[in-house]
Image (cartoon, rainbow, N blue to C red):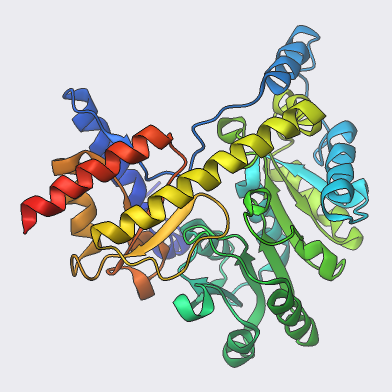
Length: 390
């Protein structure tokens, strides 16, 4: 086989640049440097005791075989009950497909909905993998520049303006990675209605929905049974390495999604699924809510601190654990700044390069999913770094 004759779709899938910074940081750590990581969005908390105990019990009881491709019934029913308890929504368990993380859920949704050559609208900036999921199925991610005025999100007016004959749907995230901003319920309702008028699909990534700090929680599922929603156990539920998520689709799509899941993944991890049921136990939910308040405390420290250092934070993040900060007053090259901060200050941040061309050179993303003490130390290091440059 000629290994240079690979599929042309690979030309449209770019490297994940944040991982290059992580590799550089690992080299420095091997040299004995102390590095503060605020790059990857991974909670420093781990699964609560009840979840770990449920995983151990599943192993002890040898619940280790394949499960149905759509997930075990107990977990699908627990997720259904969670929608009713948290959002007041009756989402039948039959519409819920448990997946190997939110990434698998997005992959399945795009496999089912994206036609070859069709456009999918999403904001620039966006989580980079979203556009690559579309490209993986030979679709075209149409990135629409979105700034602070739109809270770095798509608006209904933008969807209407950019919809073309080739457009098939929209892929949104609320709250968003990298910005930590949400789409208001009213604006999302308008977007869904406009997409519906055009016979398109709406996919909403809600993996940070549990980490919303201000408005009363709501899910895009409240806007109609035709909305496809992605969620995950990684962020609010603190289970990143367990690779467990879920997908909510219209009833008519379930057999097709199941067919895809059977062929692409067989099933999610059986151990992770049995552990996931314990996420919805009252004692686990109480822990998650305490941790959510700790994330809020970290946000309320880091945003003013960044502004004091000379960054602009034009939109206060209302969810997730990210700050999208304008560094144009400090540099004209965000990528270079993040490399210098790593090498000279021992602080890992992420340049806007990963999230789309519109904000690539002027913005950095900071994750405050690390300890309060680490955030304080990182600010002190950055303060010394910028003072030395004056």
